[in-house]
Length: 302
Image 1 (cartoon, rainbow, N blue to C red):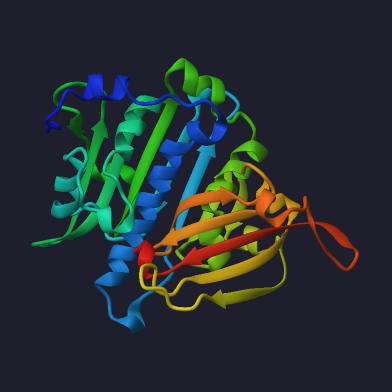
Image 2 (image 1 turned 90 degrees about the horizontal axis):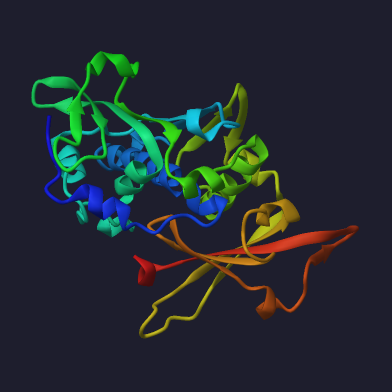
């Protein structure tokens, strides 16, 4: 067993509680983002010829009953090796700060789920090694060892299993239907999917699988338009990738037209720009229910 050196129960109690479905799903989004980072880290260690997109599987069951819901996120990334496990045990770690990580996402896991299990396979000093533990809400021994063979991971990677939503606010706002879950999942990662960065993600809800970024690319109408700004002394050169999309691309977001700011190929902020554009929808041919999505990146954002 191992501990995180803080009053974790009090820290978790003080976390901001969700007021809508997007916020209630934030702990799940954090786990998916961690999976993306793990795949990036493995690619960083490989030669260019050996790099690959990677894969993340999100399995969801019993969504209609928040108290019994089960969610598992599995990646084929670098695994929870010593450096990453040590960082996991430090709240507010800056281990992922260059990629926009704040080091507190797992506190939201503790706040929102009754049971959390982690299984991981990684390269250690003696070859392939395994690690498995329960992550529990307590002021000591929050990390409780488990049988490392129980996770069912065949290669390098990590599997995080959540079960049972806890807390009135999370239970109130956690999605109960497949369409609602997918709407907010798509909205949260839409910029990543539009620009085609990151791994394939397969969301399996009771046997019904949605594949990303394919599901988002099917919402894009016409060709992407790329614009580069003139060099600026403070901001450098910014690249704006512009997409005309079907209206469904904005479901789960405030407003219709969106501007996404990306750092290290990850969304760090999304802004509704309806008033700047000045119209409710775009028109193209016989289609009048289209929306704009712009993805802004550059060295200024990291």
